[in-house]
Length: 292
Image (tube, rainbow, N blue to C red):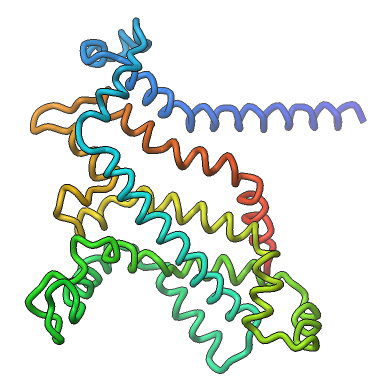
């Protein structure tokens, strides 16, 4: 009996030690980022010999924001992110609801075809998608055949539209909605509700955890987009916060203290959002993972 309790205690200690080590590994880069943001250029060049700054230069954050129109950059990123997340929640949840609760011919085949998209990284389809938004008819100076103009290039819609729907969001919502009992739908149909009314009156209120989970994941992904906006936007006024970080990189040198200061300000919205949604995020991930 004593050996059992001793072994159990040792296992707990080992697990906690492993978790602490993993947490330290994850947190350490953020510590370096914060310390670098508060250093002078001279201290940064000294490397590990000046690991901690002698004087905390909070003025680096102010100086970093002076290098460019950062208010405009944050507004550009906020517009793209908010619109993308909002439309994504609507479209992905409706598609997930249809695959989970409705019956129609070819449902499984269509779902599996959609899931194939999860295997294709954005970089593979980026150029074909760019050509599509550039050659959209009657937009951006294009004629009816999609020639002569720029389409949705240098336009918010050009970045937003390809990011709205994603197979992972459909899969996540489908798995969550499959966990509800069939009797719930049957009772609603007896009361005269259509499939759309069932979604709006039942699944929408009960789907807060999955909406928070999907919304947070989509927010992080859209907020941190770099390559796709870089391809669509060639006007500096349309820069997002990720593209604006290039202002601190020169041909021969990089202003690491300003770069890290700006990076900290960029990730603050993500951290704040996660703090408010972490309860629903954990609940949504846990309950979705239990679906068959």
